[in-house]
Image (tube, protein in one colour):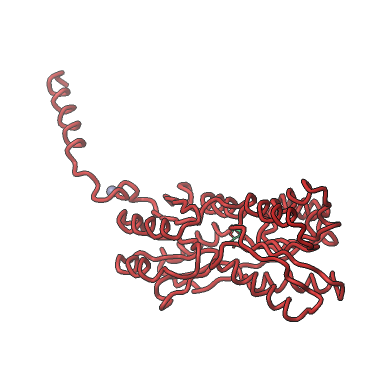
Length: 323
Ligand code: GZL
Ligand code: ZN
């Protein structure tokens, strides 16, 4: 072909691609992907990081997804902004792991008006009507609290216990349910005394800080009810720094059952750990794939969970778990 003709053709091609209209919204270039906007609580705990990893592994490009994750640093207002951005970007689905139960109606109305299905994971929300979300997957936090209390009743029997209660973020379903379980236990066991209660925001640093302050004031306690493993890790550091032996001087009950915490159950530092399963990725993937093929999905799905103390736990069990 004549050189000048090739050059002319080349110029046309370059011009055509350069002149084609920019995609209408920046999800345009994801046409052959299912675009998912995920508003994640934050990165406050091992549980949360395992939850994020599970979502990334399931909603991957090889599985046909483009996942946009926003880390709200445990602030609801940042989640509301993230959801508005997802609506603006025109994502196909919104996943919300809500920091707290209240305050979602307005922004979820906006998602509904934009015809974007919302899937709630982990904690629950209070919604004026449940058409504001398509499906919820999470844990029964009250049941988790009751499981811990049942074990405490069996383990401590009638001996007097003085409890320090490290709560999660106030207003989150995990805190509401686990606290309700303990409150029921306190009501039913007159040999139980609550000596201190405050939120450690599910973080290791805050858990350590609270227990250090109690030890500095010589508060007398022999049980710590920590609403997640990271606060338990912080409490254990504080006890050890004060020359106390966790599992001997103070018994620790915890939640999540992360790998590191289960190792501490084996070593005796944590007496009992109630599982809260973070591996929601495949469950969300299955829900989206069902919705994509026009099938309906259950409004609420509770995940199966167990609990561990040293009498039933083995290294093999720990190694066989996904987090
Ligand atoms: C529970 C989850 C809680 C975990 C904490 O489902 O919401 O938040 O128990 C995490 O570790 O920070
Ligand atoms: Zn396109």
